[in-house]
Image (tube, rainbow, N blue to C red; front, side, top):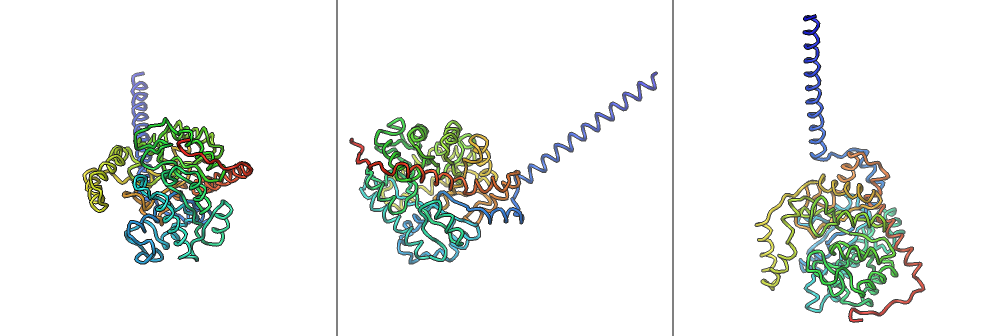
Length: 429
């Protein structure tokens, strides 16, 4: 009996030891898999095939403003047909990245509200986009509809669309808004970094609790035109207000998930669920300050700091140097492609795979994640999604299909409003 007992005890000890070893091996395997998943992304032929079959739509690129910053609105010094080492964007890299459609941002600083030059400078930026497209006709073609995007991409070109970044650009005029649409603008971000007379910004003091009655009219007029309502940069109250008013799906052209990186520029889960119900899409921003918790903390007051520095240094060169010094004194990690894909996955979990897209913010950001340094890197997102078991149909939706659906729906809503007369309200009304 003692012998039997001893054998049973020995067997039990062996079993426990084997289980412990199996557990350690399982943990080590899991750690190795995690390390591989969080390590560099390596392209496969399958991912290349899926990527080439997609229409990749990037919701936001600030290249037109780089021409203004470089005082080259006539394209004398900068030729994007050649590699531009100081930029995120040039034609060779756009083509390597498989970009099928690009919303080029017609951005001007909010200081133009105070100088009275917002409309003039925005028109100049729209002009830059049109002339850039005409300068490279074998590569670009202007697109004004979802059908245009599909047709242009099938022809092997990059469909070029215009997004107005900030409602300050309309100078409180619906007539100006309508003219921007006539010139090709297909979305407008309701605010930029400052609260307007009619809408609260995410990064400024709120004054309206969202939109004023005139702000509601702006949204309705955008619906009537078929212009996408963009809720990037706006306060949470403005996001919710716009979603209540809009008859068409809304977009966030370059925002990420607040739950993963708590910065006011990002979209909280409660709004993600409302965007799902609205049928809209959140296009994930690549800025390092918006994709990691550390980056979000470090850049929490970035826009307020920039406003204060601009007051202190009215000269543009002095302001730029002061802002660059602040950035050096407030470093934060770059993050990597996996952080960006984490945001995509979070939005998928909360809102669904039909409600997420890509809005890189290239040329408008100072820090980029590892393996998303420029426009040539988009294929890595396809591979990273494939590595996480997304199928080709889902990847195609994320890369651009969701935005195409939203744009088609906005066009449909506009056709339903075709008989409505345009309003003439101004903020004082």
